[in-house]
Image 1 (cartoon, helix red, strand yellow):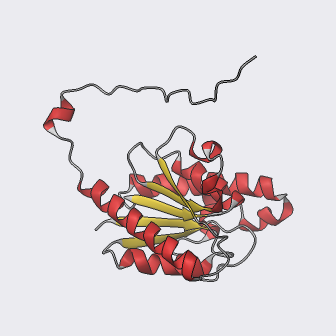
Image 2 (cartoon, helix red, strand yellow; image 1 turned 135 degrees about the vertical axis):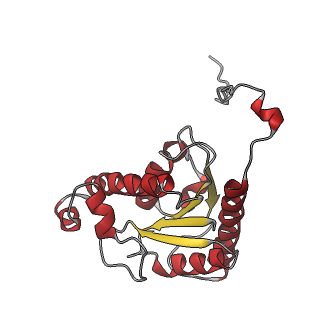
Length: 203
């Protein structure tokens, strides 16, 4: 069965993840909920706890309280990345979706960038209308602008999150069923650099 991993900080965005999980399941996908919370206890029950994620980075979750936020995010990102890569290697990930602000987006996309090209990766964030290059890098991460800050559910956030759930479910199902066409097998893989879109300046 197609499996979508939902990755996020369940201490701050529990209701949003509960809603997205419900919507993804409604699209006939299995969901694995991974908690990457740093500050506090999750408000909904994860399938993979933040303690397990921290141990993947060879740290105890209590250590995160002794360092600043940037250091805590960097440490947790190591555990998240190892957890996500292992899930993919075991065939338990056909797509991944995260909801995040600045810190959550950094943490989630660090793991997404370690997955192979073609694996559906999606971030929903208020940062989506700005410069997302530090988060996407050179990988195929889809970013959806959340329009509003994600601090609870409202008519706007529910609509955006419902759309995001439908997107990641459809992409994950397509990825799981994908077979390379005979025509594509005949052509070598070519990598083309992105065009230079820096605005011209006069001197």
